[in-house]
Length: 315
Image (cartoon, rainbow, N blue to C red; front, side, top):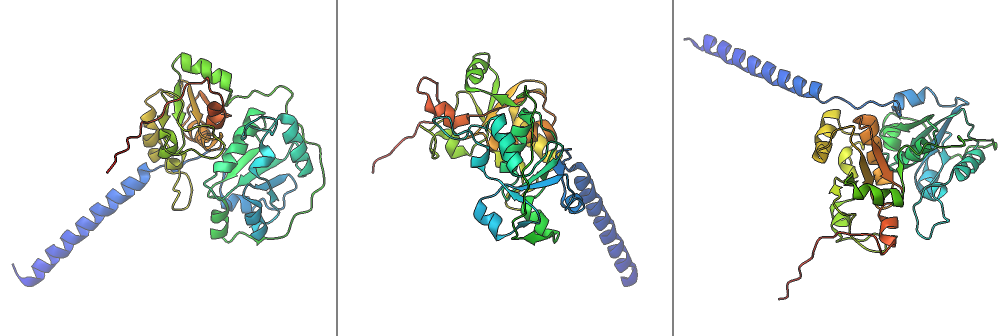
């Protein structure tokens, strides 16, 4: 075989290998299906809605970050605005009347669509989504990728505070509370063996770490631990992982999608995010978020608690 023929076969082999690798990569991409939900909105769509009279955008970040720059026209909201302070412990969701007053003061009308964003993988935004779902207000969307996605697509950032005219905002008189479970209901669910998912990090779950607000460290008995943050690309674009990845992560639950499951975290915020993932992205049918979560559970001495044992070794 002469040198020219050898070169030709070599190039042909390299081309075939390149094609094979390309097909494998394309096949892999094809199986990683992007998540979809009627409650998610992408930046490009939001850009077409800016200035619409019945679109209200809520910036769910700390006020200092909002003041440094927010999506043009966005109103500010924070966790304390959507919490009920009448309890002896923190984190409980605001009452319907409190939400009606808050939204009315923000100039939001009942027929408006509320678009929420944050800088934390939609963790805080999902808490408000969950709260509004319980009160049967469904005109709400979460900005996929949050403020960073907006900046990446050259969305307008402003430091101007929008002018607000007070309105009347009304929720339904008999809310469904469809994704909500109380402490008493949680106790009953544990008695019949309902699956429980703890969405905190491993140190909180084990009892090694006790966050401010909790009366003690530990976890609700027999709960499974899947950190909420696994559902998003937290060190990257903070968007949801692919449908294939999410299905793999939550297959650890080992339950059918129509079986009941209760989720909780420290104060019901991270678990609200997981509630969104399970119900809106993975189609689980019977998910409840424990509103008071670990803060409320740890407050009452009579409730059972588990924690990992810690062994200390002296030198």
